[in-house]
Length: 133
Image (cartoon, helix red, strand yellow):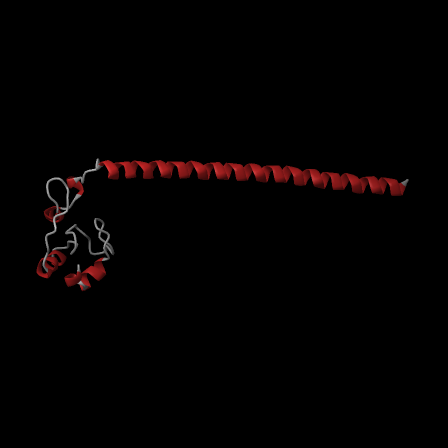
């Protein structure tokens, strides 16, 4: 009788372990489904944004916002926002650097900035290679 109760105890423990494993497995599947759903939502949002940008590029509906361009950078664009192929001399770039402006675009930069906030060029590189810009 004692052997039979010991055997039943082992069977009950095995059944409980299996039930716990099944419950754990179900929760892991639910976690995976939720994670996959969230990733899919983010992907769809990014795709929607990319499609909007591509449509704007195709249709030419996005125009350059001239209010966001620094004053010294506006000389490189015409009234419709298209870039003008004008050359800026090394002397002009040196003047910009001494005035606290970006040597490439002419945007206002602080002395602690590593990159220009407008054209994103590395300011240390730009100041060392003014003739190559």
